[in-house]
Image (cartoon, rainbow, N blue to C red; front, side, top):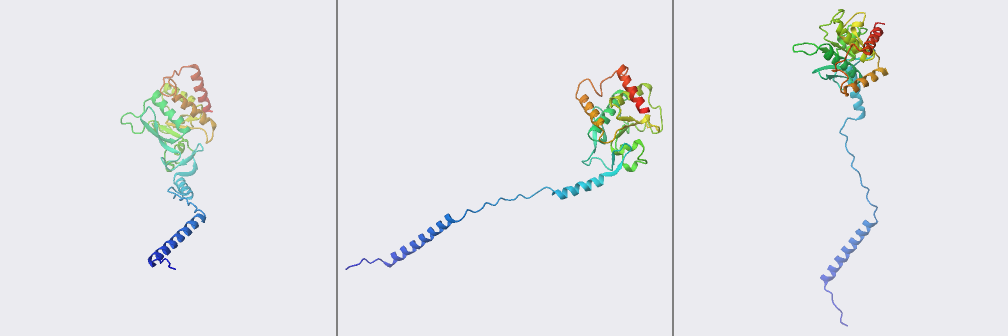
Length: 259
């Protein structure tokens, strides 16, 4: 019998192909039977300050700015302004002036007082006028925290022309100007006191006469803000100070302050 002779090279090639095929088949089967790999999400790195670091920074800033001591009206005195906390340099619309006061409701009320003085008593910030209005002063300049001018160190008082109306001096205003001052105080419903009514007068000074948290402050501030957005009312509008209702309100506030 004559057999078919397969060349040796063909046998070797077939053997190699069979081995490779077997290996590939095994690899494919292993891949199909292996559990799927879990996707690992990349964890973003935090670029901002960590909570503990942020709190430490805040506490450090508070130590640099706050004194822990109240002014005469109970508001805390600050060692600096424009630090991102409660006291800041604020514009006085319509005057071209700026004043450093406590922001929020105190700002709304005290800026209203300055604006009405500017419009109704005498224009502030004339050329060459050195110190038309002064708000915040450093606690280091406060010689007695029981005096009303200490309220400037807490950002809750302003001194209008302090060089023209120095402490302990009376009668710096005319009767007509005094009538307007009473009308301005009536606008604030008694939450602002005039230094001219104090036992030791300081006629340049106007300060909050309420403690922190008094609801009257927010109410008056909201009223003044509404005036500022309503044509024909608020600071800058010529008011008839002879009106019976206005005079009655101003006199009531004067009697209340004197009492």
